[in-house]
Length: 445
Image (cartoon, rainbow, N blue to C red; front, top):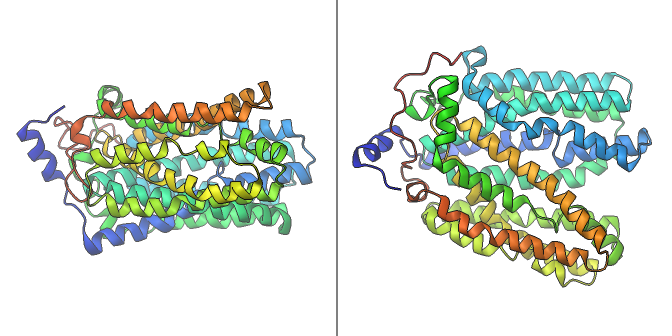
């Protein structure tokens, strides 16, 4: 797919690529905010571990009850698109994304504060965490939408994708180790008080307005939409959105991870729960070097090459798990396995940011996020069924299925319009359809 010279010239006038101090100031804003959001995200490992231990140890819930709790409280995640669309069409306090951070960061604070005060019960915990999940989905939509918008306007989607995924992996490592410690050392009231303080920190970020991020960010055509139904039509017809959704969902559909891996390591390899926890910590931490490498490469190599490299490298990511014989070997192989995933996860979110239609950054980013998480949950169910059907070789079949699915990502790259991948980070990204209105639509309220 090629753009006309006129459309390309218009696209290049929409953005002033960020370099030097301006780029670093934007990263300095998003880095701490993203890390804070990943830590307090109710479905992420930090909050999830703490609440699941409350159910298990304090309320004596069964495994089935804990699973039901996770299923119910995760429902808002599967409706992620609705929150993204709300971000794109609603303007709380006339502050756009900052308004979402203030309003829903504060709402999450009050919800966690209420859980800290009220007596602990299964019903109260389920309702409270569910409402916190709803509230924080709006925060996630605002953060993802703003990140994608700035990534397009400042031609720094690759660097921001690296920040997004780097902070996500850091939060997973910190949360994995801290979640269990918090459950052991703090009472439920103190734990929810800690979560409330973190949520208040998110709201406080909404009071900040650094020029490197917010100067004219909503004034350019990339931030403009039409009306509600017009936006929906544009989203469906925007060809670039489909590849990142499919690629992210397929990559996260990994039957060889989660429950099958846990049972394989603890039952077949006779590794302890502590070894399995350490494996996850090492695995997620090992993503960080190649995510940082992506931040360096994306400014020097065009995305059309980077995404092929990243996909080829990630296809055999889980192959070593089929050949380990002890928990110690698993800890060693966790390092190269994590390294093989870093480039791809950064590349696919770089692609997602570049692929957003004008004014619908929240909608697409939350679509990617929703399918990404739904795919993980579905793959866990499928993987567990495969493992249970053949306890002796079930994990091997899970690994084979994962490798085949990862290989299926390669032909999906052909779905990406060539102009979306034609530039390196720091060069103008000509990704927007040329018929975007020059002024905000009246539907923006």
